[in-house]
Image (cartoon, rainbow, N blue to C red; front, side, top):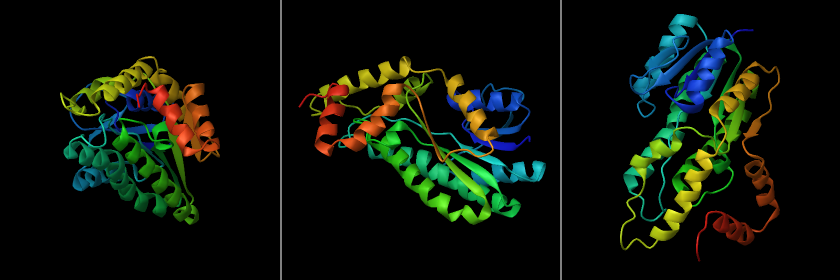
Length: 270
């Protein structure tokens, strides 16, 4: 059955690949972008600013006026910011929480009345492996993804009576534009910053893993299966084996032991 799908953030990465593949499968796909960019002509592109409630409502209203329904919402759009917890600029903290978490909330709240009225739908929220474990020197990225985890779990129970399914995706590292896009939002850790050396070590490891990560098309193909699956699971961890298994290992260890392991992984000296 062909579906009407809204996916946020289709200018690059997962969103771009998934929107194209879903459209190729015959679904009616609406993808959102913040600014004009080259996109797949098979995808219906809408301007949307996740941080602006009026912009979100206008985009959702446009889809409903054209199609009369929204079957699947894929909350994909987000951003990455790097820096120490203490010395990262507060404007960066506000921006990542407003985009990754509150932006997702705004879109979900705008779509829910539509799905309730039609008595069904799917909401697919992109979290991260970093939403299941705190990542050093990405504390606010992890915090935004942890928030998505709690929100999705609560929402899943609230929506049972309306036959709306909530699904969480936890990707590991993929070779998207994350490294490039993060450059403008790195904390200015100059001389005198007590975290400077460890931050540099961790950032080198983060960017190495992203560069060597999987192709976004792999995740896009999995996303298509989730959209078209009759009874999808509530969660999908997608990525390298070591990243997926690390979530289970973390649960079996004490907090102090896990902290030492994660510090060693990111080459953090103590």
